[in-house]
Image (tube, rainbow, N blue to C red; front, side):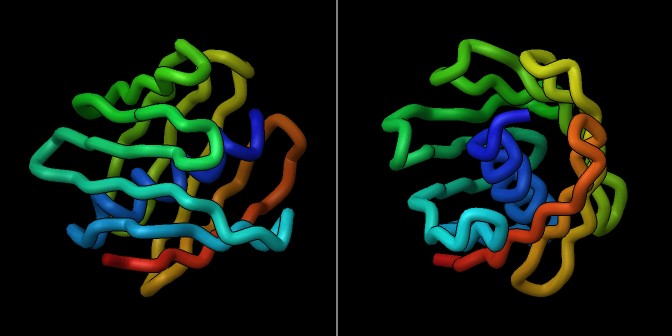
Length: 119
């Protein structure tokens, strides 16, 4: 899946599992701070990717990425998330901890780490 899709999933997973607003993300793979925001209320998510100038969100278990015009499934189970990126046809799992999300993308078969900045 695309790097921006992984970052969007990390923000969404953190917002849902922590109940906190995401104000930004640091992507360890690229070494960049990403202007991605997300807020979850109940089973609904609103998010914005500042790099791409596009919104993402929706109701669980389906999130819509307006920039890609594609859906990503997201299921939350405690501090873990899993789902499927319909655009790339890749599954993923994510582990959420205090201030960090580790996401395993089954496409490349690799882990990706994101530090989360909360609002």
